[in-house]
Image (cartoon, rainbow, N blue to C red; front, top):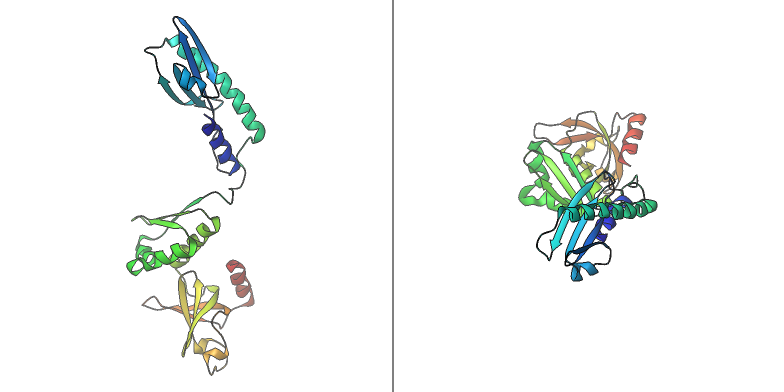
Length: 266
């Protein structure tokens, strides 16, 4: 039953919330004729040499699990009752020693504990997250190291051993599926430049374009004169056209809006 106690301590140490700690012990039995002895089994010897292996696990409120192996036929209820009572005494002693080490789950989840995150997206966005031939979801998996399951209802479950990887996958999916509104201000990164403008990733997996005429409040000769790939810029959603394309601008952004957008991106 060491695995029960060890698992409980490991869960609490990892910050996993549990209702109550569980301890356990095993009871052995030696029967010679009419004489019976119930033994508290902490080494496993009785499991090999004795007539019963009776495992009992539970909290301070009661029993949560029982398991028995027997090598004899039949057992009086009085013996079972004795074994349960004796097991309780053993369990409570072990539980006391466990709680002396750690008496409740830690307030924060361990950075080494695997993460399981769940978010809800619009079912109409499922195809966008998956992408053609699974391109998008494969990219998210490769980038974050997370395993991602998507249900028809729009429920997305993210599994990852790395908390940062889980958070990254969540941010990317939320960014891809977020519905933008005209007038919103973002702090993004220039991803590519063409003759008529620059593309900026304003959310993970979501790009918009700044037309050359929207790069500055004066005439710009070449896009490269104002921005370069990798530059971080503050932009406003100027328009979302009928094809869902996002048109951005660097004009008409209040300093307070710019500061808020930078803070939100951190």
